[in-house]
Length: 76
Figure (spheres, rainbow, N blue to C red):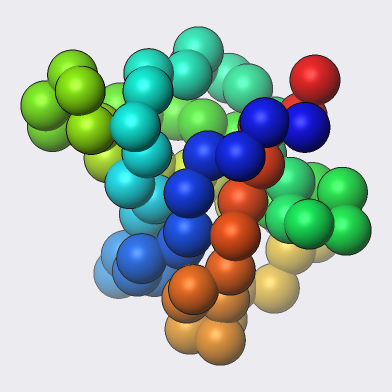
């Protein structure tokens, strides 16, 4: 697992917003510290050096503002 950042916000349409220090590949699975899948990277926006990542949650993942601050990782 490679550390990506923390969930900074839950966007109005249920996507998770994460700021990271590198550009991951689109479609990559994102997990929490327990290796539980949160979703897939679907968009990368902002500056190249510290982009924002939009993660589309898996269907079975409950969307909650309680996830703000959760550390997320890239599944390898």
